[in-house]
Image: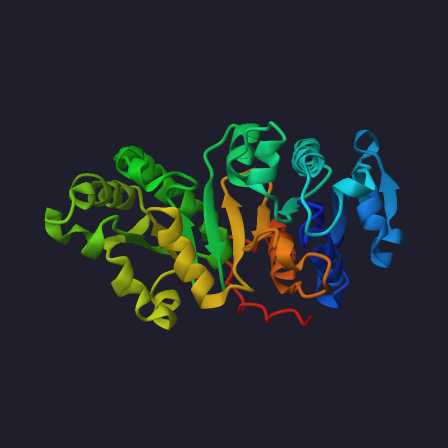
Amino acid sequence: MSLPLVGISLGDVSGIGPEVTAAALALPAVRRALVPVVFGDGPTLERFPFFRRHARVEPSALSRVESPTVVEVTRLAARDRVPGKPSREGGRAQYAYVTAAIEAMRAGHVDALCTAPVSKEQISRAGIPFMGHTEVLAEAFGVEVMMMMDGPRVRIALATNHVPLSALSKLLTVDGLTAQLKLLSRSLTPVVGRRPRIAVLGLNPHAGEGGLLGREEVEVIGPAIRKARAARVDAHGPIAADGLFARPDEVGKQYDAVLAMYHDQGLIPAKALDFERTVNVTLGLPVPRTSPDHGTAYAIAGKGQASCVPMAEALLKAAQLARPPARGARPGPRRPSPRR
C-alpha cells in the first residue's frame, strides 16, 4: 500500500517552521508514515541538506508524486528570509505557500495538509486580510469547519475561534452549536470506532449556575445539547470548565472530546496538559489538515533550540487522518511520541 502524500506549507521562513519541518521529516517514524510535498521557498530549503535530495517542481507543474518533493513557490531575497527577522515579503510568501497547498488539495495532488506556523501579523502587514488557517480553509472549500486540539490525554474542539470575548454571546446560537456537535460526532466516529461521547462546556463561571451567572447555558447551550442528542449525538452538559479540567487524567476516560465555547477556554488546558504532543486539527474539510500547536518563535529561530516533536506529531496525525480506520474498527492505543 502506498504512503499518503502530505502537503506541508512552510510557514514564516523567518520563524522556526523550516528547521522543525526538516528535523521532523528526517525522523524514521515520519519517513515511514508519509511522502512529504513541501510548499515553500527554494533558497530557504536549500539551507538544509535534507531537502537537497528532494525532487523540485513549480506549483504549475505539480501532480501526484511518488517521492519526497519540494514545490518552489518563492525565491525570496536573502534579506527577506533571515531567521528571527520577519519581513513584509516574507509575510506575503507564507500566505502564498498556504494558497498553493490549498490548490494542490483541490486538485487531489495531496491526501492531507500540515501547516507550519505563520504570523497573522506579518501576513496582515503585507496587505492580506488573514485571521488564521482555519478561516482561510473554510472559505476556500465553502464548508463549516471546527478547530480541534487533539492531545494524548484529551481532544478539545472550539465552538468559536479567533473572535473577541465581547462577541461570544451573539455568536453562540442553538442551531450553530447543534451543527457543530453533529460535525464533531461525525468526524470522530471513524477515529474512535463508535459514536463519540462529547462533554459540552458552559460559557459562564460554574456553567451559569442555572441562569444566575448568565443565560447562555439555559437559552442556547442546553437547548443545543438536547437537539443534538435527538439527532443521536452523545453530548453531555453544560459542564463547568474548571470542574471538568480539575482532574485532567479522568477527562479522556469519560469523554472522547470536549467542546469549548471559546479559544482560551479550550487552548489553555490543551497546551497546559501536553504542549508538545497536542495537534491542531481542522474538522469538516474534504482533506485532513493539521498543525503543530505553537507559533513562529522568532526569538529562537535559526538557533537550533526548537523542538521538532510538535511538527512530527502534526505530520503523523495528518498521515493517520488521511487513512482513518474502517467504520466499526476498534481504535488502537495512542502512538508513542517520536524521538527527537
